[in-house]
Length: 513
Image: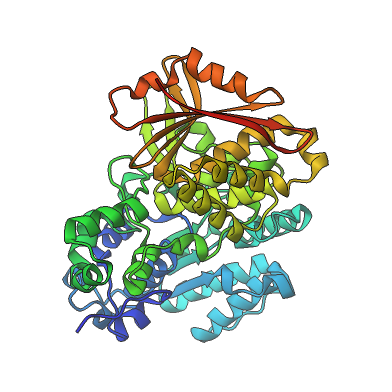
């Protein structure tokens, strides 16, 4: 009988008691907790951070029975039991009662758990008192803090409140500077890396694991783990989807693999993998589980619509500040971009990790630029794809007109060049494997190339000129020459947009000679 798939289960004790599948990460966890003392780890949401902290808590509680059959069971001294303060910031009522009061309440609950009486009046002195008394009565304290950044992320559209929460957090964490004698181990996790000065300025010995090799596969599933632990679930999935094993593995890799933090090992998104085998369908599980809507708006603000093959300096991946959110570190730390390459000059190449993120982000970006609901952009792109498959260029033009239809006229006129280029790119980029947008060739950059099983379409777009000008450029620069060895017929298409009409006003199509 197959083990249950633990979709959404974050408590290690529940996962084990309900006979759920667990990908054994205890060797890596053992290495971490014996490697050092003070750690910070940033990973995207739904990547297993909460389960990691829950597992560490059970190790330090000495609950050996939960680890039967796992690597660590005979590698750990289970008689070493420590008190654990496990704060899941996401579960605190900081939005209702305020962050200071919510943290105080969490500390009182922890004190009650260990039958410790607290008498201090402020958050800082209360935290100090709890650490001292726990250490004195029960041994050195293990401190695990999950989603430390939630009180900041939730208020990115209310900077004064975010900064107020930031000050509370700085005061709270400042206690740790002088608490070393009372601490056994510390791990703080979150999605983002806000400036250390703004929160952890007093915690100089906090080691950042985010891009450290020791944490590269601590969260997420490796290829070996996928093929080992999920093999029992594959035969039924193969039958249902009509795929053989190599085809299934290749498609899973295309959709859900690609995350790397050390450029040596890549991992699968665990939430997407568990959801995939439960649903037995390829969908955008991670993206659908909650996408911060400020991201497409932030990209729109900065007029950034291309995220594939970005090249940035190493410093651009670091911390970010509340006062001015920088797009690239936000996208990298939240998992919408991942590392692809690193050169000797300190530059990193970034790209979408996989098809799930690429398709979903394209949908949301296209919706943001087109002033459309995200769920309505997919049908438009499907229509576009079908029109190309039928070699129906009038239908292609009608879709292009629809894409531009809802943009407010005053916005389009004010920034028409940005809208024109970005929406064309996003529309065809969203076609994914069927299209290439802004393709660099020896003779220049082609606006778009669409390949179907029967034809290759070479498209050039102009704004407030003529379709004939677009066609002349295609021919004059011999864009079709790059595909001369391909036996499929080449179709040349010139399209002109009118900023006054906010639509296509002219187009021509010819077969390449």
